[in-house]
Image (cartoon, rainbow, N blue to C red; front, side, top):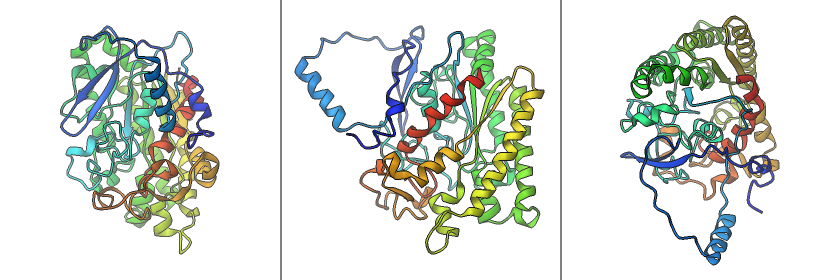
Length: 406
């Protein structure tokens, strides 16, 4: 039986959404994307191939079984509803390459990042393969990869089904983005407004409005604020306690929602902050000689998550026709970390890259060895999970909340 097969039963039991989509490949200087497009969008002419022989099909099936990779489950959308596109804002958990052309240390468009990506090449994703942005878009049957808005090779057709605005190193605290540096959430919103004008030029004002109103918007931020700005650099400890700082973060999140809503978004989901104290780098820096999970950091994450949850629930009541949803990833990821063997993993306290203790971004580079099999690891580097972990968690989590977005 393939590794992680028990944990993947729920993911492999559903077939991909039957939207009659075709594949098209877009190649850039550093990466190759395969997107799914609706048949009405013109693409390359397809040529019929002769049916493969039974022997060939048997061999292919055997090969797939021997080298099975985690598949993303389809998210079931109730009849009568449509999610035409996905838009993502936030930090490195969901960045798909916007930092590639930013002067910052918070980038990863070099090996060994992207080692297990479909093209086998680094794309600017902070993992060994696909990240939650891609997996959500794929599970919704929209496209396999969510391209970064900053991609110089972005085509007009790419705009129709959504793009990614997230930037590694960003946070709700403006100082967090300045320190990285990263594309701030404010600038990500500015890019979204610019995107809307481009979309109108491609599909017209009426269709663009339909896409903007009915699409899914995901925001993933907060980890860098707590782990880096407050605890590591201690910059904000001069003026805040962790209680007042998480209040400040929640107010910033609220302001972001209001601006995103004013720009046309209605279906807005916020991922909670993960259990930061159990991330390998934080265990190394503050977990003592045993590298235990740091309770103070986990409590800080839970403190912010509680305030974020309350804030989003309140916004849901005051913003007409909105669907503002808190999405818990703290508890599902913590369960995987603490009970990793149950999910088919072998290592949860170190990353696959280098020693796994501290390597992240520029410390995880082509001169550093990586583990032979990343599917055995919960984390890729000392801060970001592997594609296997993301695949295990993302679709079931979104499926759990999808009805609240509609």
